Image (cartoon, rainbow, N blue to C red; front, side):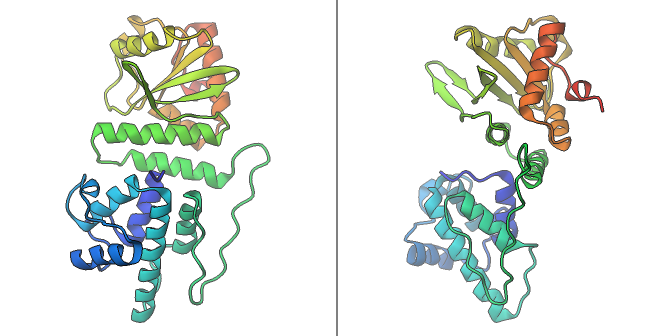
Amino acid sequence: MAQLSTTDMSLIDSIFGIYGGYVLDFSNDRFAAFFNRDLKIDIYHDRYGIYGTSKGKHFRAFLELAPNADVVRALTALWEYREVGMLDRGEAETVANARQRLSNVLVKLGGEALPLGPNAAPPSPPPPEAPNGPSEGVLDALLQEFMAMTQMDEAPQQRGYALERFLRRWCDTWGLDAHASFRTTGEQIDGSFLHDGSTYLVEAKWNNRPVDAAMLHGFQGKLMERPDWTRGLYVSYGGFSGESFNAFTARRLIMMDGADIYHSLRKRLDLGDVIRRKVRHHSERRQPFARVTDLYPI
């Protein structure tokens, strides 16, 4: 299953089309024939019909469900088809730096960069890594991905899945060795990461309304059934209700809301240091939710 971010999907939509229902200039029959003949893939298989019947919706499902290798082949073939068509029609590229940006997606999926086209300048090298952390380009991409998520019109469950994937990438960017969501007997865990010798379990909620005490108690119950070195990070995009703090005593648990994520990304804060400061604040003040703007006042 291809791990494409919200930013990746937005780029693919800009180049080929997804969300409008169309893909380039294909008719339904020609789209099916293109995938069957050139890629040996049945794009109209039932498994790719989970979002609807249009070409764009089938292509979107394919991008989310197909193996990385098939997604790389399809994007490369569609790029070549698009490029030849634009050359024949004498059209100029309308998507800024499209070749290099799509090449970056293909390489991320384990494929090769797109070959240079007619009159194309060689791709610019990636920006050098910052000496003590991820590059500005990586951090800016994370911020853009988060901002794109805030504009999603998907169902809450789909937004929650997007938040889980984003949190995993954010943790990995700062070397926190994140794991994806998993299920054990009778419970769902939204992810985990390592920090300062402790394993943190993650609960991720993308709701506009604040999380209440009952939901916090439920997550803490999962922590208390595990070894003492297990801690928890509860991420609620919509924050936490005032009564939740009066009716809930946090043990081995810290909290983060959508504003915390935004300010951490905007200020280029080391996520490991943010976690460390939240933990210390809770230990000293018995306050599991310390805002990033208070921990980093400047």
